[in-house]
Length: 164
Image 1: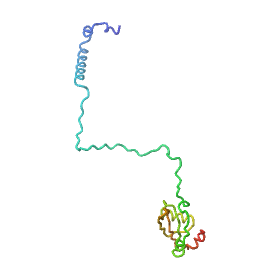
Image 2: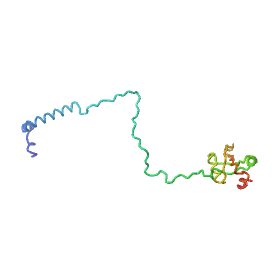
Image 3: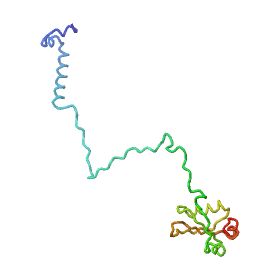
Image 4: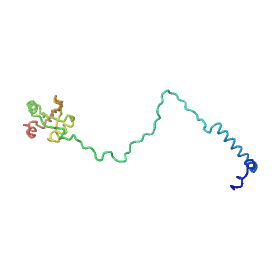
């Protein structure tokens, strides 16, 4: 019922085929038998290694391309000029520095550096500092000696601040 050939016996089936198709089928069968016996995967050539150490191959490294910022707003700087300078020092030795060396003495934030102290003094008291010397006191606080430029008088500035 399937094309008329299904009802025939196997020997009759071969007899019913034309000779050209028989040859083609025989060649295909031979090829299939060879493939079953030998295998179809052909072995490629192996890479000759010249070094004893294996170096991982260099792969493509793409630059970061974030789709959104990981932080919604930029961080606020906590070390503003009010945090840098804590208070002016009013000891006898600090007063001597004001009178003799044109220098103001401040207790400052321990993490503040000299340039931050200089900028904070300029912003808070509107005076120009010539140079800043710092030291860490035994109690762990930082002391800053702020030498003023020659066009500012430390005694006048100390009066304006309210040290004296």
